[in-house]
Image 1 (spheres, one colour):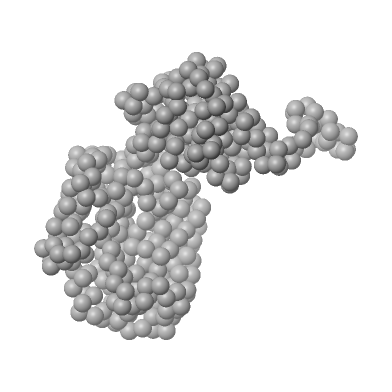
Image 2 (cartoon, helix red, strand yellow; image 1 turned 30 degrees about the horizontal axis):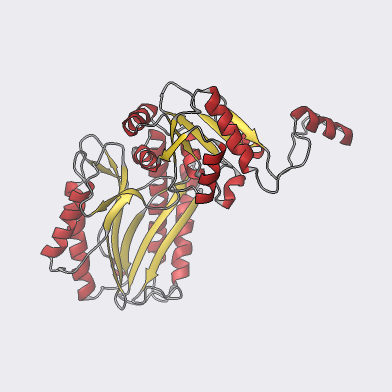
Length: 410
């Protein structure tokens, strides 16, 4: 199932003067089509999987994908207009086949006989896209491609293969489409946030003097996985940036009394990543650490007060910087205090809570609000939560207290 709001996409494409989007990035393909792009995308080259999104919301989506990926795609999206190309993997449905000669017959029936390419044939893929465009009267259209992803050599080849198309950069339109989440996307992010937070609970229970950072990471992963199993969903990935103590690069650090423990973590559900952080210590943190954390708490509260539909991302950043200034941090400069989240390549997605950013906060965005402070020789401190923007405000997806927790007192 596609996660695209076709009416919203039509408005964005019409405003940009586009007749369609052709999406080549694997994550964008899955977002548009609702199924994975397949293994042929692992080289990071354009063409192995292509999603076509016409600006006309009534027109169906189309896809170009490998014969190896076609089965899962059609199972997930039976009505997709799918064109397939051959890749290096030789695979055949042998249902009902009993003998070796029948295998050759099966190849011939499917039109799968003959040599396969070394990886995939980019020209064949672009030609299949050309067929779709011609059939739909888009072979002379203005089409946006996700050029933020596409290698320059592949774009040159695309323009040469389909010279009648007026190609342009559709990356901004794609970003704006992805910033507004469907209910399916929101549910994946809720589950991811729930699992990651359960991992933090498990990790906090493992904090004792002498425990190494690696054990804390393992405890977090185990807690996240257990929560997913209990919740009846599957994690497609996980990541963690955990630091212990004053040396932020020491991966062999162990817990000592009063040392800061910062856990910035996320799990992925269906490719959609949560992002959240808490700070702990086992024993009282230093007075300086407590002073810094108090300022971070105040800045987080100031940003949260501005986190509402109709406000700008820049206004949130301005409120948080002003709060830090008020608490005496006159030279503290943070490039952004958070970002959108979702299922694209990185954990952090556009738009960002950055200085002067005029982008408007809109309902059904899911954003991470964060206040980090990194002090080599002191340690890292951080607060971060996920929020769903509603029609009237912001709904937090996390439940753990945002305090600097002394775990020895619990």
